[in-house]
Length: 193
Image (cartoon, rainbow, N blue to C red; front, top):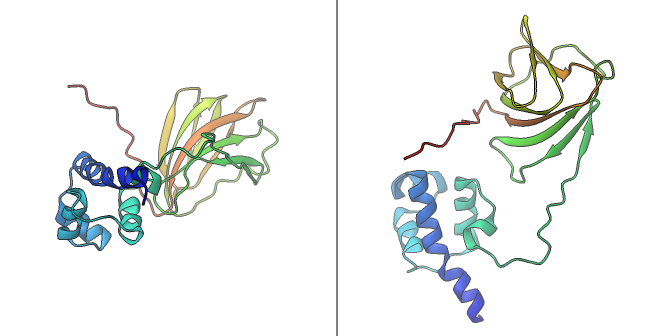
């Protein structure tokens, strides 16, 4: 193994410890979540055990980060993220998260009013939060209707009949966080000390 690979692996322990402390969790709680023993986690954090892929994968899942974030892999050259838009039911969805499970982030572009394929409210499992990036949004939730402009946000249980679309002749662009099993996004402002 060359020196750069050894340096990368030596930095894993302090990063793991910092992530656990930032999350304010114990070794025992993390062990329960990952299936690794508290002893193994402690040895990884202290640099007494060289991490393996089988150990890093459950930790990356538990922290909700890509594996590269745990090992601080050196850059591969091209820093661009190549997002692939998906067209579905008249919408353009741009997935912003790259991991399976948990809360998912999307940029959603709704067509101008009158061009939406349906205005019928839908229901499904989950919980959603959205923030209006551009345009004006018509939001129907149950028996109530709202109009939201740039900088406004809404959150709701998707089991309640709902419909979201542009309120005028311009497309509406949203940042959306969706938890398929009802996970909440927990969007809170940072506390100043």
